[in-house]
Image (tube, rainbow, N blue to C red; front, top):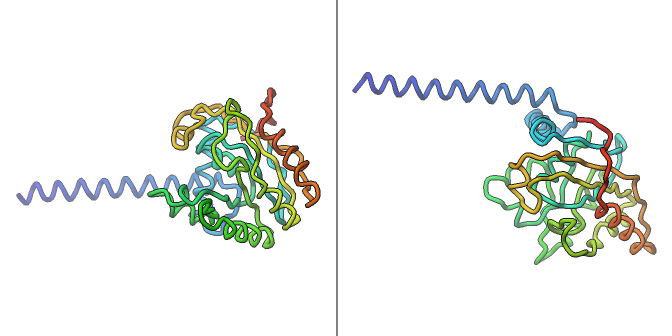
Amino acid sequence: MPLSVDIGAAGLAGACLALALVVAWLWRIGRRASAADWGADWKNAIDGLVRLFCARYHRFRFAPVPLPEHGAAILACNHVSGLDPLLIIAACRRPVRFMIAQEQYNRFGLQWLFRAGRCIPVDRNGHPQRAYRAALKALADGEVVALFPHGKIHLDSDPPQKLKAGVARLATLSGAPIYPLRVQGIVGEGHVIGGVVRRSHARLYSFVPIECVARHHPACLNKLARLLETPVNEEPALQN
């Protein structure tokens, strides 16, 4: 019995050591690949790992999002899978706060990550105005806020759907420009988890920012919709 206990203890110690080495290795390569300051070393390490995952596994190529070094900005992107937020993070050199559905924010095992990223949960069936107030506060503080104006996963093959007007209201009330983004090349499109685990040739295209004013909401939304919903047939600027 003592011998088996010693062997079991040695095995557990070895597994713990191996785990510690893996975590230390991930921490090191994550910090090295990080390109945005999220306010904590461990968050920056995750940022770097996201960038490596997108670049190496999903063969990500993108046109850089031309965000200013400081000041408010709104990112508006088409939404085809659960991979989309990771691609947006990997294409930006500033931290991004995502507006996400409350039910996604409460996903088991992921809430800690959404909290760490200071995501803004949207209670679409209760009080969505709370999320918009939080987003306006973030923009007033000079942060970058991202959202998916279709409000859910929407593929190019789906019937046309109007964009939610909230993106134009946020831009008007905050004075922040809207940076249109489009993702393509996602193999697992239509799925949250499938989009992340199925390997893609992911692409992200960034367009000239749109300035919205109250009296031109429809025109602003129509222009944004055209950019988000029109396939791009050329390679973006090759960066990774």
